[in-house]
Image (cartoon, rainbow, N blue to C red):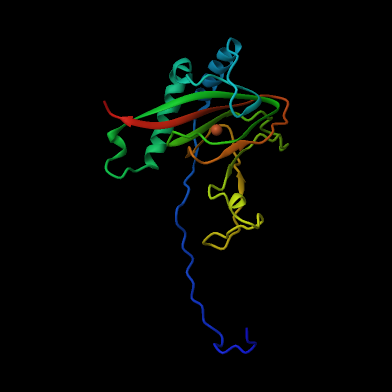
Length: 222
Ligand SMILES: [Fe+2]
């Protein structure tokens, strides 16, 4: 290559564009104290007589996925709320979201000291959701007890690039992370695409961290 710059200084006019967003609903269910109380009570009751399942959970209790049946009215209310959020974030090529029957499977997670969930996705569903009913810490304390939900960049840059330190800036020039920890409180309901990989960091608190997870899908109306 020659050392002489025969082109001079080029004026670059670049406009950053972003495509293929990954929407995550980050909802707070206000005045949900009674809902939380009733859910927690039915979870403890069910846990007392059920061994639970082994999925992505390590060192925690994962109930069966029929909570919609044993969770009473509170479970139904939560399911309908999550469905209405999911519907608002959905569209279909040839029909409206109301043309389908929306259904959920639902389970409870009770995590104690050193429990975590390995990174995973919920294939076969449209949306996944988590509702937080007990963060396993003293609300007045600033102590970090871990246990946070994190999501992974679905474009998998780490797996696809020779340079695994590579990241893209977003359209505003802000650096993007490979994984993002969500800062959540009791009463938060998070709805995200079911194919999005996520996990739960190790919980180091002395109490119990309790959440309810939902898979949301559609079937043709019969
Ligand atoms: Fe999950």
